[in-house]
Amino acid sequence: MIFRSALTLIFIPILVWLGWLYTQNTQYPPADKLFADVLKAEQNSCYIADAQLTLSSKNHTNKCAAKVYRLKHSSKIEYLTKPKGAVIITNCQGAFSYDPLNNTSTHSECCGLMNCSELMQLLLSNYKAQIIGEASIAKRACWVLSIKSRHFKNYPSRVIWVDKQNHLILRAQDIGCDGKMRSDFCIQNIEMQEDLPESIFNETQAYRVNCLRMEKCANINEAGRIIGLSVTEPGYIPKGYRLEGIRICRCSCGCNFVTTQIRYTDGLQIISIFQHRNGHQCKECRIPTHNTRKEGDCSINLLGNNLLAVCKRGDRQILVMGNLPKNEIRKIALSFK
Ligand SMILES: [Zn+2]
Image (tube, rainbow, N blue to C red; front, top):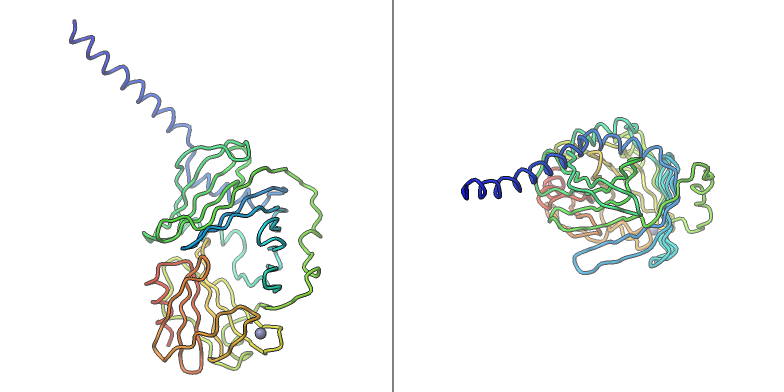
């Protein structure tokens, strides 16, 4: 009798726990399907939101408040605290950013060779989604999804908080190769707004400074002809990455600096490669060209969330920028012929 009671005492909690576990699991939708729905919902989102942005580097963390405007493919982020006055606008034509600390701006023309659905397919083929929990963001119930590379361990990843009802991303954290949080974008409150005027996303003329202009270029041979150097693709690029586009970048401070940018993407991360004449220096356009090295050398430094490799090939300086493990960045930089 005592034995039976003891068994009941042991088994009932186990059964209750298993039942709870079962209901918890069945409540979760399939993660990859949910992630695909999130990517579709993001392309149709229309809202105004207050957000907090946190950027963490090796030595310090910067928190700031921002106003976010979204109208389908267009978005605008206005910084309300330090760097107060900074603006980032992206739309189908390209991207614009204004940096009030240096009073400089960057205009980059969209150079994408892939359309939105191709990019989405690329992202889904390179990353796996997993639901890791539930939470509430801006008073809305969310799924928490972890987005990790299908090919590499110790690779940058992302955690997103997704509105259970409309599938919008309400919070996103970027995790570096070292597993540490690099950036956190968190919406504090959100107001759906279908009738935002398109003009909000065309206000770049308001910023008279005009520093770096990045224009779309048809192909590598054309880029080389424009800058008067032989421009090449690297011999190595990590698995899953595809050529996203090519640009010619010109500094408008009067220094005549011109460089080419080749961009590769895996759907989430970007590898950006600059090639220009060795020995150029300009403080205005903020392309880090000062670090000229001996032939065969390759120096690697942290630049914001990215690693930057600098190397020299004949009269060319090559910069490789990306959020990748150090050995991968070095491998790309050294693969140039
Ligand atoms: Zn310049």
